[in-house]
Length: 236
Length: 286
Image (cartoon, rainbow over all chains, first blue to last red):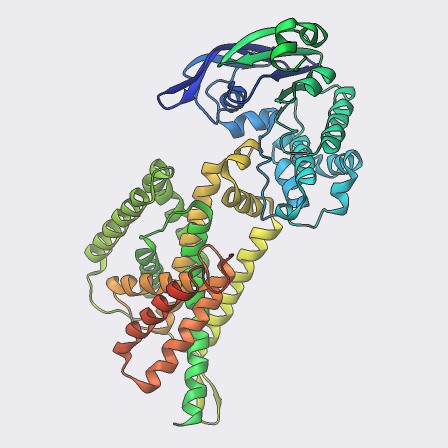
């Protein structure tokens, strides 16, 4: 089973350093969450892991192979898949074409039909909308499509960036239900969320990030009980 | 005014418009995918002309049979040009890519001038004409329309029916997301530049079957391509075809009423009017 280990990563934009030595490890088959307030550096970490941003320091290991310097498409081909913040759909293309693009990795090409059926079963709404141009979908449907597109790439590791952002509470519940199903399937996942309560409720393990550093980590249950976390993020 | 002259000119313009459309499609495809305005477009058109000239006159290959060779040549030229001149500045501001492609333009024109000088050339190509009453349509025109339509159809089939073609559209739409899907966007950009070059070169070859030409013919055709692309809507291949037909018709009909040298004046008046009243073109989004 796949593992991902991030060691002492430092990164940022130009002169502005955002991450200051972040280390994080995903356990195979487990759902790990990375929570923290807006601006903590969560998205920057994901962008650095995927190679959309170069790491200034530190390394990223996928299945104990150093992949720090690989391009995003090489990582995606290996099975490291990010469902990015803001969906980033191919808005001029249809739902089905988006899913086809998701199935670009060599290992996913041959199983396209099978995966498509499975994804449509998991998210039946998309089946009804398959011929619709994705830019015209509702926000919730777009997020569903972004997840489905990620799943089409036969991921070994799935990372989600701010799934719940800008969605109604009911849609957020639906999305987390999908995450639960994927967890039951045995996916190794990293959930990056501002919605700390929801994230901690579904995760096995959790990291709390603030000011570009990992502040605390532990079993999600324990993190939820921590006094500092309750005060800062759960409003209790 | 003679009605038959108008009909004949319209047919002329329509047939020429298809080739103009194909030519402009090359420019608009490259812009649509990578937001680069390719100032090397003119020399690529000229390369198509001279490729078919050399293949037919020196090697004795029929100009139409030579087209597949021109296609391969265009693909290679475009991909090499992309990696040599464009790739390193692909994320730089527009001015940098303009300068980079302009230097490609200068180098190609220089090299072509050394090879072929700037004296006028022409293909010797005889095809039967079609005649109805006093109206004559040259065979070369008919074949040019057929080939231009065929290439356009093939381009659309490629972009909408194949995985690689869809990847081009995906990269045009959202390059970072395409990378996250495992699409090698550098390769897709290079391929798109190659296809844009193929379109320019094939259009050049077809124009060579219709008119005489020189190494310097590219300049006028490049600006014409710009007018067509803006007319149809930047980045929109269908718009380019439509714009090409409009400019082709405009060009041949205006020459009934005024000297040929006025054609560019007329074209650029249209260009300015479009920019003023419909800046996104006829088929441009929003």
